[in-house]
Each structure stands twice: as C-alpha cells, then as structure tokens.
Image 1 (spheres, rainbow, N blue to C red):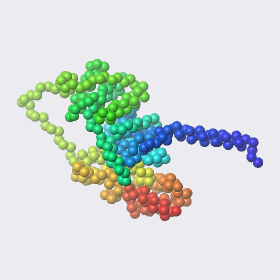
Image 2: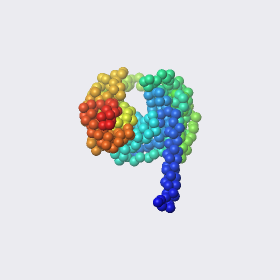
Image 3: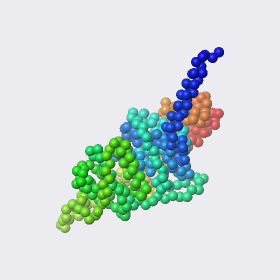
Image 4: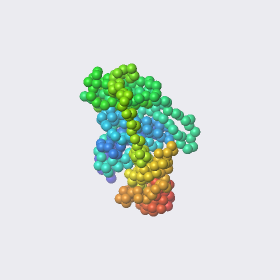
Length: 397
C-alpha cells in the first residue's frame, strides 16, 4: 500500500525535474536553437582568473573546417574592454567549436578541469559571437562537402581605441584608409589628440581590418567597456599626415655629418623559431583540448612542449615558406609522444569517462582503460587516439 503523501512526492519530484529541464533550456538557449557549430571561448590557461563563456551558437558552417580566429579576436577585445586585461600573449584567448551541445559541454568541462589543476580561478560570463555573413574568414571545406569558397574582404579600415583612463575609453573609426598604413603614426597622432583635448595620459591601440571585421572588433571592445560601466567617447578623430601632432612630426632635422643610423640586427634564426612556437601554442592547445580522447590519453602540455622543441630544433623547416603543419605534428611520427601519455591516476578516469560517453557499460569501461593503455604503448600517436579507442571498445564488447 502506498503512503498517503506518495502522490505529493511524485508531483514535487516531477516539478523539480521540469524546472531543471527549463533551466538547462534557457541556459543553453543559443545552443538549443543551433544552426551551426556550438562552442565556448575562454582566456588562456596561462592567465588568472580565467574568463570562460557559456556555450553558444557560433553560426559557423559545419561544412567548413572551423576557423575560430574571428571569435577569438572579438572575445579578446571584449575582455580588454570589460576587465582592462593586458596580456603579452599573441593569442590570449581560445575558442573551441563542436558539432553537438553534449560534445561542447564535455570540452568545456575538460578545459575547466585543466584550469583547476593549475589552481586558476574560473569566472563564467555571458558572451556569445553574433555571426553575420562576411564576418568570419573561411579557408577550407571539410572532406566530402562541395561548398563555395569564401574569401575575406580586404583590410582597408583603421580604428583606434584607448586604454581605460579615469573611467573613460576613447575611440575613433573604423575609418576608410588606403594601405599601406604606418600604424605607429596613427597611434602617435591619436595619443597626442587625446592628450590635448582630454588631458589623456595612457596608451592607445590602433589596427586595421575589413569594413565588417573592424566594426565588429570596435563594437566588441565597447560592449565590454559598457558592461563594466565605463564611459565611452567617440572622438571622430582622423589621421592627417599634414598635421604636426605625434612623435613622428617632432623629429629633429637630420644632421648631414651624422653617421647613418644602423639597422637593428636581425633576430637570430633560433629565436625566430622560438617565437614561432610561442605564437603557435594557443592553437596547439585548442587542438588537443578539443579532441576529448586525445586530451584524456595524453598530457596536452607535454605534447605542446614536444612540438615546441621540434620547431626550435628544426629551424630551417620552421622558418620555411611552408613549415610542417601543426596537424602533421600531432600524428606523433616526428618525435616520441610515449612520454606524454597521461599518468595513471589521470589516464584511468579520463579514458573511462570517454568510454562511458560511447555507451560502454561499467565492466566494459574498465576493460577499455586497460586495452587503451596497451594500444597507446605500442602506438603513441595522438591523432590516432580516436581510432585506438574504437579498437579498444570493439575488443571489450
């Protein structure tokens, strides 16, 4: 016989379940109405705190190899505007796109796990990339698709944005500008203008882009500034070469008897290769983190160190017109990746989680962990991790 309050309990449990589903629906509304790839963006793992977005609909066409650089550029500008972030990294953020909501959530969880392992504070913020045609350069179609190639519009718009100064951000542009452009002259001129008119004492940043992308970058920065409650001032300033503002106009006259200025020595090739590896680091990390089986089986940071060492020890290839593609290095055939296989206490739960995601039962998942370790010891090739996982699953079922 059922207790009297049984029906009441059922109603309460059902109501909680419905509320949870509604909460998930609203939290992932953009992803639920998915028309393209879904994903998230986060500041780099070398920073703290790490600002990470909720999962959103990127609008990127699944028929193309996802180019998340436009998303990263805008998210970086948003963070600069909102939190006045100053990073020396050439790629201070990473955006990772996925085909499904569940896959995106898994990759986000993996990213947050890596952040916590580094004792980094995580701050989740609301931000999403608002896709529009022409806003994202597309470079290559996926195999099996016949989609018309899309090229990026020319960079012919200049814009400048100031650092936050006394609660205010100043900007100008985008302004139609004919290349070539001396960006430092724009920066000098805009700085002098702000100092004269607003008693500004700080730095400015100027850059070029296409009509669409330049506007989007400016808007992203200003959206962040407004979200933080900062005042935004549009100056309508434009660079005029005939003006005497800026450092370039106040140079002393050239002394005819003075020795000609020596050109700075070119950076040694080994340092150029090192810089190449550093700039490549965020994209390499994104590739590893985005591949869940790879990230479970291998230590991504170890792989990145191996790739970096390869770049620095193969200078002629790294600095050539066509250096070995990053994807080729993840095949693991050019250096030994065996030392990068995850330590046991990370390997077991990671592979087990991936196996359960592939609908493996509890007993099968334990079998897959052991089988995967054996397969990887024989074939420590990161890009083949998915194939090895499928082989392990097949053997354990």
